Image 1 (cartoon, rainbow, N blue to C red):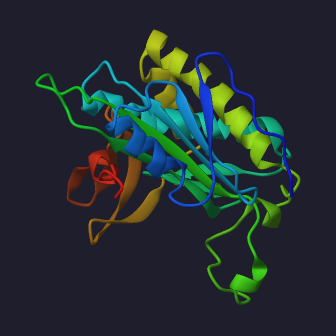
Image 2: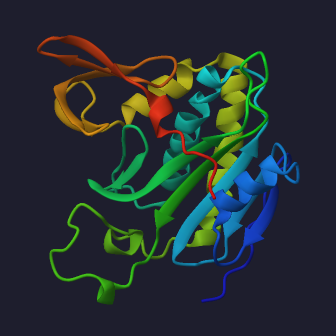
Length: 245
């Protein structure tokens, strides 16, 4: 299936990636080598998936810059909502999963470069990956019921190009909002789409299952969970990926 290449808003420059390694890995490698900088967006030519990664150059400490993880997720939520049927539900599962009609269709990713003496990273890459179409021959009936693809949820007409373009526009808008207003708007927007927010839930985190009420995420993106023994904080930093090989 041939699709036109996406167009990008000012301040973002698109770079197509074919095959492996994928856009996220390429973005990290080029950022680390000084060959990519703020606003470089890498996207996959694969028409069965959305694979999108944007290089950033943080001006704040990493603990705050990790807010870009949630900014990218929220941008995808708005981007998807703008082009998907209104009856299709999108949610976020902390820390990274993207749910369509209650099943996992994709995830956000983040990787951070070396920090200077002030705790500010040389670079950061945020990424969004999502399955648009999946080959049903690869799945037995009933296999992986918690996983889905857009074509399984009534969104099969949405194309990779539309998703790349919409995500890029909304991400730029949300980064601008974050720069002007801080994390508050992103925080509120992300929570409004969060699975199990203010409900009792179980989460498997670092080989331990925690049960409690999902109270909120704090200003660094850590999950605050009210358990029987008190409030615990699950650190978003554990979701940061090491530099891809």
